[in-house]
Amino acid sequence: MRRNAAAKFGKAVEQGIKEIDWTRNTEDIDETWNQWNKEALIKAAEKVLPVENSTVQRKKCWMTGEILEMMEDRRRIKDRNSEKYRRANKEIVKRCKQEKTKWYTEKCKIIEQLEENNKMQEMHNEVKKMMK
Image (cartoon, rainbow, N blue to C red; front, side, top):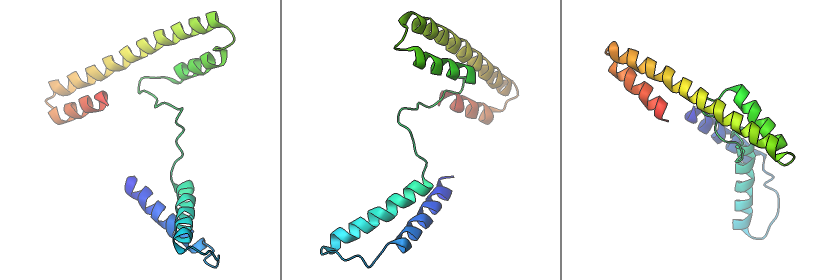
């Protein structure tokens, strides 16, 4: 996956360099070169690389769509009604604990079955995935 993205980025940079207007006349060659490189790199990055929103948190494996919707509703009511917000927050915490316990229980059952069948490598891989 990363190699593919790196290759796409490289091709996009090459294309960006080809599209640069080399006839622009500026006095400082270093400044011109930096400007052209930045232009090509920024255009390539915008085309190829995913944009990450710093406010979006990574979703946990055990979170359901329903929990995420409840969180979105909670965000909407945050400033308006503090009692309603507290109730929504309490419900979200409760659901998160339930789903997390359910998820870990299922994973542990899978790991136990792998251990019983002497599939140690697969068991190790499952534990590793679970701990991420």
